[in-house]
Amino acid sequence: MLLNKNYHSFSDEDLMQNIGKGDKKSFEELYARYSKKLLWFLYKLLNRDKAKAEDFLQDVFMKIIERPEQFDVTKKFSTWVYTVATNLCRNEIRNTITRQKLIEESGIKREQIQHESYHTTIDHKLFKTELQTIYETLNEKDRIIFALRFQHQIPIKEIAEILACPEGTVKSSTYYLLKKIAKKIPHHKPN
Image 1 (cartoon, rainbow, N blue to C red):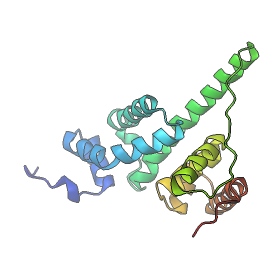
Image 2: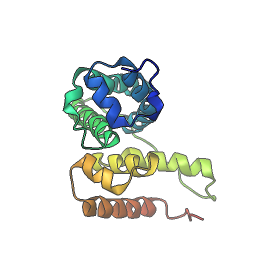
Image 3: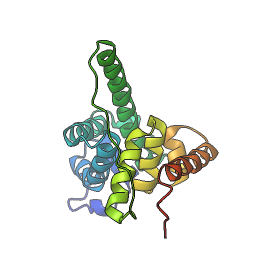
């Protein structure tokens, strides 16, 4: 084994193979490549809960350390790692919904979210705030597609692999998602 390996030049998939052989430096390189992107992805999917996103990020990387053999080296690592992160979020969203239903059934009422009325032209900051509000009302599938496609610029083909569905389904879901968002902010005209 070479003493001065240049880990920056290794592909993600090569690094995963090395992790399977116990190479700590390969793990550190993958962490450096993906931790910030995944943290932002998790943060958005988990309703901007930074502490929970950080915990989930650690869970994703623990899975890499503890079970590197679950990764199929003939596939793209980025697709696999986003699939792992997406599945963790899906489980959390389902658990949260279940908890909320139990709270509502017990008679405790949640605060109502108030939406601003719009009488003036939207500036960029207000648009982002409005888009975040809309994002929070989206169903689980739409949130995941929005985050993967528009916040992380993941190609349609990879999103299809992550969600285990045909590319056409992702394309049509993206199209209808954009129409849904456009209906909720008709006063915004993109340049």
